[in-house]
Image (cartoon, rainbow, N blue to C red; front, side, top):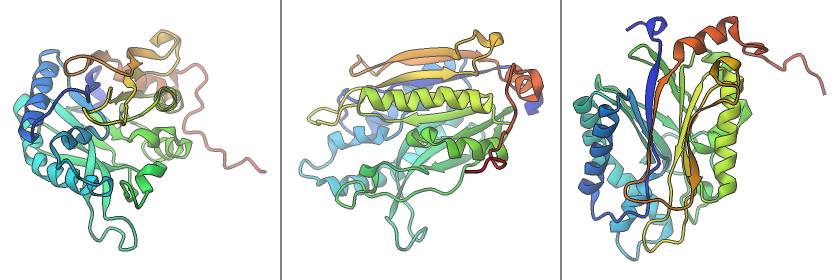
Length: 305
């Protein structure tokens, strides 16, 4: 399908309940498949799950696993999960942004950390597109902690009449990345943002900045995070799910297309938000001159200090 002919898109966002007990990877994969089936039944084109959803796997890790070995454990489990996740997207006919988890990246930077925080987008046509987190938090760069390396690329994906791009959590807070997207990938229909935030403040940083990016890029920004803490763990998660559009009269003024409010705890698997009929064709028309005041891919190159 040609991108110019696509009128709407439907995106499902799963705010995973990290407190739900988990015994093994197969059980986790079964949970992902159940949500994919639910998303498909709801007419979704894409299912997005949060950043570091792999932290759930620590529930069945060795009890005495040191913090600085958690990344290795999650990376090993992630490699096992990749073929199954690809097959699930093909089976259900729904694109799956399977959150993010650490992946070994040997040779990428001989002087840097050996892993990256990678988001995987599995398409029903069998393709897998990845995005390595570009802007890391202090805890992600701590040699005594998770100790990760940074990514260096944003990939624009064309699929099923849609143009997609991914950012991960803190990436969406960086205006420089918004500028880069506006200059080099100006026709993004959906910007997909898996996140993980510990506090209410972090949730607002990510989600409020996602709303700003929708204004700056005149696109739909879909963001989702984890809720709750895995059993026997003191690391909480506070988040929700939302789809933001530009604050235009045509879209209801306030930019909130669909939203599940942030929370510190939830029930069962966690809520699934299905945002139906995101108006991608109308957004393209806005980018082509229909917006009230949007100046296009604006640059501050003429500004001096």
